[in-house]
Image 1 (cartoon, rainbow, N blue to C red):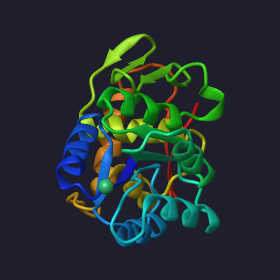
Image 2 (cartoon, rainbow, N blue to C red):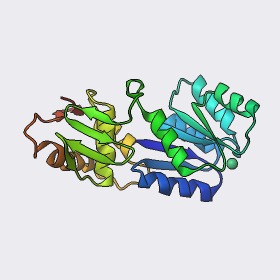
Image 3 (cartoon, helix red, strand yellow):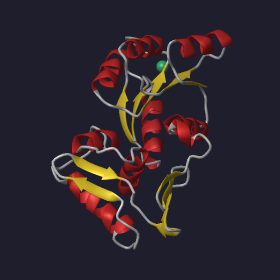
Image 4 (tube, protein in one colour):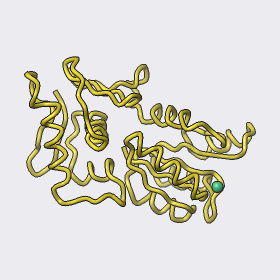
Length: 223
Ligand code: CA
């Protein structure tokens, strides 16, 4: 899952990026409102963490503009203010959630996970496709009950494939949701990582393969 953090306090922004990357998210940073809005409109993010007070355009304007332009990316707004009016304004502007500074990183993570859940997963955050299970809260993956050890990037790729189970995903789509701007990507990077995943989640198991290639289109994960 790829996140955009728009926050003008560099220390906070960098700390968020480091922390979120440890949780296997790909993270891009923008430090002012104008650049933040441009990037949010140009790229496909799975979620945006948006500071309310920003130079250039503030968080409220960015939120409103994205919604007006038909972008429905989930947005968590960060704010130093905590009054009922501020919360209502933030939610009215189109934010999905609202977090008051200073907040605990654990709380931010829990809210990110909640917003990334698909509607029918409301009861549980564990992703399941056939006998393959992935729990984003503790990075565990099992197939047929057997634990599978994945690298951070393999985990992020598998989580994205599972969240979009049944959809055919092009390499470009996968790249833009799993890798950030600064990542070193070679033309065959996606194929290489799909290969790693196949070796871990399909090859060792008797059950039918879950990762399928659609030649000329991309990849899909399904039973
Ligand atoms: Ca700020």
